[in-house]
Picture 1 (tube, rainbow, N blue to C red):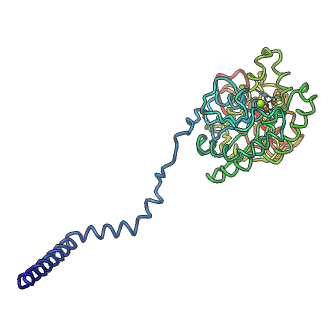
Picture 2 (picture 1 turned 180 degrees about the vertical axis):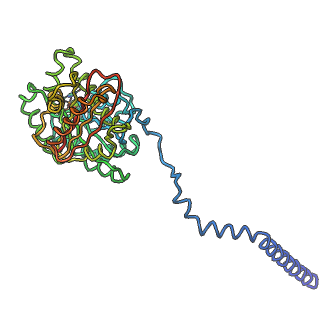
Picture 3 (picture 1 turned 90 degrees about the vertical axis):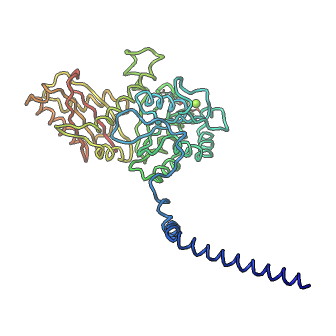
Length: 384
Ligand SMILES: Nc1nc2c(ncn2[C@@H]2O[C@H](COP(=O)(O)OP(=O)(O)OP(=O)(O)O)[C@@H](O)[C@H]2O)c(=O)[nH]1
Ligand SMILES: [Mg+2]
């Protein structure tokens, strides 16, 4: 018994010693880590700072290469349906790599476009000109489109939706409007969703389904800014210049070059008069239909230069003619130094601005001097 009491006492003693040692150690640790504790308190108190830091880890694995085309606005293109895809390919070819081709079938996709630019909508193998089916399928998959736009197209200010009017898929493109607009809002974009749609040829319009699909598309997009490309006009303008097979590809390419030239000039400095990105955005924001056309005038001495600039742009435009008066207008003139320094020509150029200005509420204008031009180049955009 005595030995067991002794053992117990020894144990108690040992415990006491351990406690003492450990508390001494704790005190020592505490004093030596005073700075450390302060640090950890600091970390707790200010751990929010990293949460707001710039380097948010975003998944950019699917992001398409940046557009190589020079442009005053950050833009992306979404081609819907077969014709919309072909138009989108023309924009990829001029350097707008941030383009997505959306279709309900793989079959009418243009050749020479990377897989990463395609988005196949499941649920139908084409919609066979049935616009209600097109709207149903695109509508059911609008989140899929929105996700693809977010992952692949980055943060554009403007989204241009391209579609062949008359088809079942392309004519349904407006059902994506809510998703695309929501996406632009979510990234604080300064621009809008802008539609570029083709009007079927006269021959095609004889088909009542194509005709009513096109009318439905026009009414769906009428309040949004949009351009109508008249395929009949394009065919007539190009008929004697290119073979049947190349008509639409050449037309698509010309249109992509025309629009991208406006985006490029708006990014270019001019010593005479600059049409800047704000002017371009104001003009593009105008609700309703926009007409774009260009012309080259070789005889810059002609007295009726003003009216000739406008008439030439309208005549050679792929768009149906404009109304007699529009909300905004943009006139970009590209003369060479010789023309720009000739007082008589300069007076004619001013006359051109007042002539076009007289047909719009607000005129935006730019003069860009380039040496190797075949004559005075004019690009005109009439909006609203
Ligand atoms: N400007 C232009 N118009 C085109 C082109 N390809 C087709 N179109 C026009 O677009 C119309 C609709 O055709 P698609 O775009 O192939 O039809 P879709 O949108 O794929 O619809 P579905 O095939 O019915 O699902 C045609 O009738 C043509 O008038 C093109 O390359 N350029
Ligand atoms: Mg199709």
